[in-house]
Length: 176
Image (cartoon, rainbow, N blue to C red; front, side):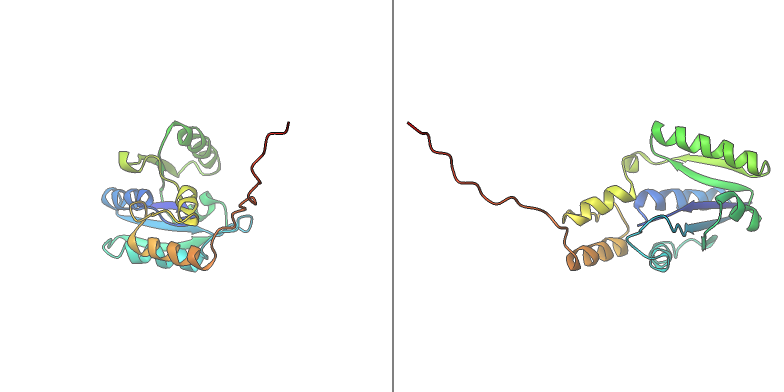
């Protein structure tokens, strides 16, 4: 059985990697499909994201990497996959993902969505959070694969965040 795990993966996190590894244990083949979304301004190019994922998933023999720029369900049909694999971190994810699963099922009733609960240690983790921490110089080594942590550090040391520091104000003196 073929499963597609779609996402932007900008960047891939250890939470994503957890879902990928567990998906590879459940399905004969897993395709990690990196979305090309013209409405978003990603930190890393699609090719960089593919390379990041490739570097940290070399140990998975039944994994394939690809990109797509269509509806997820259309891509899944094109790849003749039977399953859309999705990770759930919290109840808020479930509401959105359930809506998407029903929508995808209405478009293609032969494709099932399978949800995997993210492991506890990654339940708070998102790519947006990782980028925010890295942007302000925090360590993300415990949140992303090593190769990604290095790339994030390089990215943000080249272009440090613009932080407005207000000019010092003169101390107020009491008047008589």
